Length: 107
Image (cartoon, rainbow, N blue to C red; front, side, top):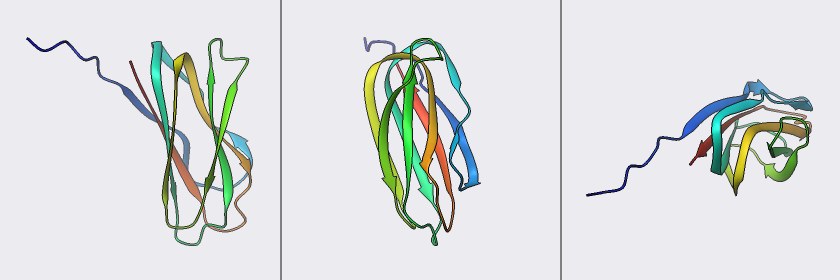
């Protein structure tokens, strides 16, 4: 018999058409998850910018990892560690184009 696999959670932290430096929506998970992935989708005209996947135990202190996003790409970064809060943040503004960031977390 196969082991039961709990479903993960996938939510938008930074909505489509975002360009400016900003913290995305904080996603509070129902319980700590071990794997967290940020999927950054850029428009065709996007000038290089930086998005951080940020993780926290308490929603106050954040562990940050950066990913560079370029035009017409889907960029993925994954972090392993048990965290209860997750968000994405734009830390270097996009001077052209825009980005959307979806964060997925799994047990």
